[in-house]
Image 1 (tube, one colour):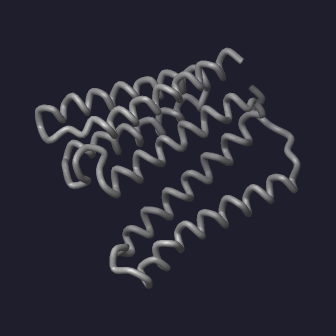
Image 2: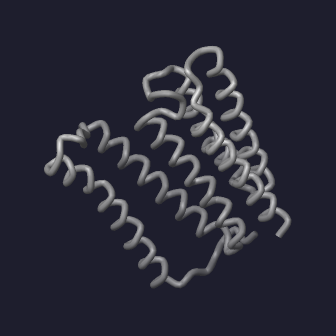
Length: 178
């Protein structure tokens, strides 16, 4: 993997316009929906949360593109970034197990945050990221089993998230070998 990548400045500018413009549009949609229906009711904390997530995703994507030209590595990192984003988003919106107010759902946010911090520590090296993503799959499954004893388990989302992290693990494995 290259630590530095020579990039086309025009392509970089275009990607930034598309991403940040899309993020702004996605952030504006709930505000527009709130004007049209009572079904959407976001507070300022919801907009702040979404804004922080979009900025974090943008920074992570920028880091990934700058770190390597290897498309298998980029795809694996996109899976990691997307899985982390979805963990926070789904868990904050409706909860992965039952509903967002259950304490056991905090485990998913802690897992996702720990994964991000571990990625920084290991400098997002493919082999080490493979281990991080694999560990996240195990944490999701273990939390699902723990929910058997503490609440009404919802195995659908648990299995979908665990499978997603296993796919990311395999993607990093391919990136490491490539």
